[in-house]
Image (tube, rainbow over all chains, first blue to last red):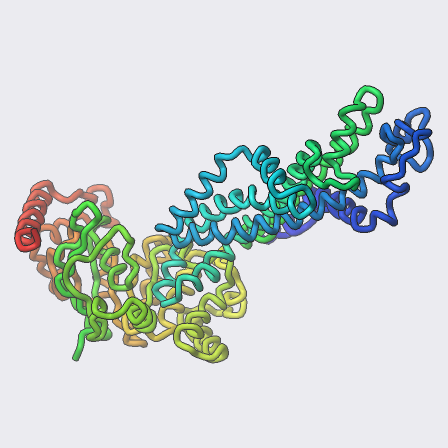
Amino acid sequence: MDDARIAKRGLSPRLWLAGGWLLLALLAAIFAPLVAPQDPLAQDLMLERLPPFWLDGAEPGYWLGTDSLGRDLLSRLIFGGRIAFIVAFAAAIAACLVGSTLGLIAGYFGGWADRTISRIVDIWMAFPPVLFAILLVAVLGTGLSSVILAIAIIDWTRFCRVIRAEAMGQSRMDYVENARIAGYGRVGIMLREVLPNVVPSIVALLSLEMGIAVIVEAILSFVNLSISTDDPTWGGIIAEGRLSIHQAWWVLVFPLITLILTVLSFSQFGEALKARFDPVLR
Amino acid sequence: MNACLDINNLSAVLANGQRVLRSVSLAVQPGEVRALVGESGAGKTMIGKAVLGVLPSSVRVVEGDMRLEGEDLGKLQPKARRTLIGARTALIPQDPLTALNPSRRIGPQMTDRLVRILGWSGDKADKRVRQLLDEVQIRDPDRVLKSYPHELSGGMRQRVLIAAAFAAEPRLIVADEPTTALDVTVQKQILLLIAELQREHGTAILFVTHDLGVVAKISQKVSVLYAGKVVEEAETAALFAAPQHPYTRALMAATPRYTDPLASLKPVDETVLAGLAAEIAMADQAWRRPHG
């Protein structure tokens, strides 16, 4: 038992790889003006479609090559990370707060509260999410806050459904009944007995949702509905790369790899965190 | 003097109208252990839940009253009822695995109730909890109080739950098959522990069990339950000396014996069951007439 706990607490490679990538990407995004080798917006037609550093014709200082306007790809990816992370954190936390609260209430109180919330969730989830997002941004207008709002509005149901199911299971447990016998109020029981047991799931979902938010933001950028300014976004770079795939594959491939690594890391990190938050698994 | 618990003519039905408790009456005097025996589904746990105010929402009490130290629980406002039940009763649950919150340490789980419900200071609650842990023979209270439930064995957890139940000095404890989920070797220790604490604290216990051996060891009085109906009620010694109801006799005959376990494992006789069914049907008919 103790051995197992030490192993779990120790260096899980999954946690470290995922966390390492996220930390690297996050730090690069935060310190983008210091880290980026070039101005991400500077166009230079003399330098268009430079290949990445290991291929013939690469220029020093343009490590991952340039796009068809001669802008440095690495710098654009780094600056694009800023928007990706802002959206990931803000949208996921907003969706989490709304969804978890409603899920906890629906699952623990049951009855009409559950029926009402669950019906809303059912209706909500009947919309295709990407279409819903595009529609919302079209209505809310483009811009960072609209994108965040749109993702939160779409994805709170994800939290709501999972947390409702967990809270429902919890509310049938004997310790909840014991707390009722002892005379605790319902809200007190929900917060003290039920909430701590669903926190591991909330944490895992939160991390997963951050990855999803990154994808949705990229999709919105891809269809040119995200941030209307010239700021580079991963989805925007992918959209541009698609047009020049035959001349400059790297403009498409590197942002895709970045996106995939980030999304994967978020989900893996969440799973590993869940295990750490759960006293039984810990 | 008021009985500690006085259940009078209690009937409860499911949503489909089926009776699950059939005019149950029983009283537990202060300091007395009353056993409630019957097979699974007989409604013994239901009675415990009714007393503690945690009946499932699918079960509705349609008749009768319950008095806790003279206070009619049915006449109290829900909030006052919760407070009264919280202050004067406690539960020793069946399954120590699910009765403790897995994500909270034992210490706060035990003291919380004393602090929040009885308004004790943290120090007083802590002292009290340690005293009770000592009484249930837990020798390393520091470690136990800091542990999460999953770090303790089933027997340890049940000790913790027993200590928690007695800590608030309730007048009545409902023990719902407290030894069923434990290893046979631990069962006896736990039973002795409950009996010892019960004597020292003078707490009345409604002891729900299907095990007649346990009944003989711990209780002064017994109610035998079948299909939500009390079919026999007697002093424990008298019941074992001369069981009156055929069902009680059949239950006793069905108790496994170590000398010849297989031969002694007899199901309850068909004629006894038929007699019981007739008895229940008659009682229901008599009950339905005035109740429509």
